[in-house]
Length: 304
Image 1 (cartoon, rainbow, N blue to C red):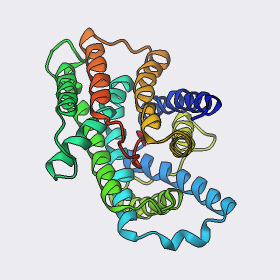
Image 2 (image 1 turned 90 degrees about the vertical axis):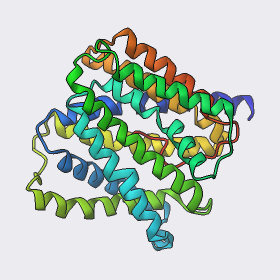
Image 3 (image 1 turned 30 degrees about the horizontal axis):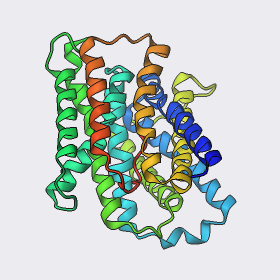
Image 4 (image 1 turned 180 degrees about the vertical axis):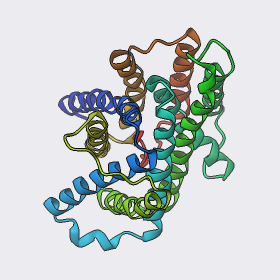
């Protein structure tokens, strides 16, 4: 990269990563409003769908909507949208937003571990040590009685971690099955619409469907802001990959985790034990060790 491009890319990493980190606080605000997580995910995906459809119209992509294989859409819908968002919304009411931000850092470590198991990644001592650091970070969060602000939220921390498992499955599917020719904006548009079509009957079946209130409350503002933040920051991430490559762009993950912790302190006055700060340090070290120099970009670099 030229010096000017490097400065622009560095700004985008810091800006988009810093803004993306607030998504965990927005999740918590939305979850505290009393609406069902099923309903919250539905409305979030509705808003995302509208934004992406308008983008497709503005950029002339509508004619290409049928070019994406539906098997890709189904995997991204379930593993990238519906399931992880549900896990996060269910956990958000109980878990501090900063701790949720730490759990998302598990994704690159779990991705490498599963990729090694299914034999699409080779053995690397450094990367295995990275997995060890990630495992040690989870132990710091879950084992000491004084780690979490309330020991009873431990099951909810584990539920939040399941979102990372979903993103891991999505990562590997994208890496193995989706070619470079696929337009990710189109793919995300179709997956968002599919998420809405799946969630509407589920909400009706469980009696959880509710309209958003007017005038808007903090719940509606949080869900709308979360949808906008995720779309904008993810598109900036894709732009950054094209400008500077996936390795440089992957550094955004560190900023998202750190800013997620910072936003929790700023907005919710969250305070963390030394065990949690130790987990954060171990997780960042693990991320650095697991990410190889030529690691390909994946679709789910975002917390959704």
